[in-house]
Image (cartoon, rainbow, N blue to C red):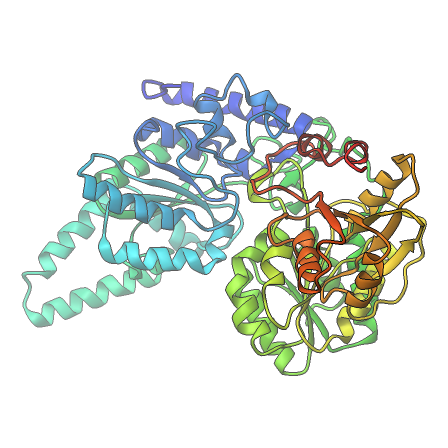
Length: 601
């Protein structure tokens, strides 16, 4: 959609229509709401001033890019947002030529913009990268690594900082508001340029006084951090004032250097129920627009709640138990622990690397840290898991939430790889609960471990199974059903429930094993079972490459049992998994119980 000839009135009307469409669609499909409603004018102004057909539009995390989708080639498909077979909730180049990069994890945008700026210079092209980043993403160290280089190489780049939560400008009140208005205009930028030119020709003494004056002015402006890093600063600008945004963007575009535009917005703008800082409006399920009430009422207790309750029980009994999460206090269940024990449980913001390393120091000091992070986000701290936790064999616990398919968030969020990437690390113990009772046992077992360990659990509820959980013992599996059949179903974590549901659909008796531990394996029991069961079927919500089936095949080969046992694993194939309703995604992968039952012979 070409909006470059729109009047301000027409642009404001367009933004209102975009908000209405986003609200209607998200209320039906679920998705990210408050941040994307708050960034509508920011994105409309981007399309007005810059050229989305040639300028790289880089969205950090990109959950706020719904307006961008509506302004490009996805207007007719927008009703399919986050649905299976529909458009993604994030930017995706395979979906549209207007999406520059895949983005689902935080704090990559300025690095991408820096790389794009280098490439554009080398190619001699007339383009400029434009990155839109939220204040939450500014808590990650990668942002400052990128700005440190960008401020040094000085290549033309525009960074739009969407400030909707943090208090970057609040401490300086009225002075800041006044300066912000001045700094956003051509006059201030012109004065800065002229002052720099004058300084170059003044005598040494006068130059010193002028520089001290310039430095003093910086100290009462909110842009000091960015200017010290070598970036020009414009703002704060009202992020809902299109005239102010267009003026700031146009100025930044002309400056031919890296510029950060600080725009202040309101989360949930235009939907009064969600306006302001309400964490639960960040990502929502289907809801009633008039009341804001969710349409899908809570059903069975989810695994996150089970973990939170188990850890809370433990923390009440042992004051050495501490914990951390990285910007997901509600999503990981740590919020309840933070409320009960604010001096022992922390949210360190979007800083997974720091979360892991800081807890390693606490473990060295004699505490028992529980690190609660989504499977897909723990990938961001892989080096810290190896370097800071496992080499020293420190007794930290990784509680891995959202393991397996997470549904509508798609490729960047599916928890497929944790078994594979953790299993390779020495000194690491891996296990998984299968239900609520075994979750409590998992937390108790982890508490006793004197070396690093990790246990995984799904986003939703476990599939109920009628077998009583036992206290966990290191490397011990649990044989739930023993028969005279040649067929053994082996489940790991939530895979035990899937195996049980599959077993019920079979017209023959089969054995059922809860593996419990994938590292170390219960080699004694597996050796015994190899003498009885000749066909093993593996159920685990994890990647096949390096996964549970791989661990079992390695064991069989090492013990010369591979010719006696045929192994078939129903783990995820070597591909990234699309977005959509979890059941539909699982059906597309052929891993629903009724599909798996047809594959067991």
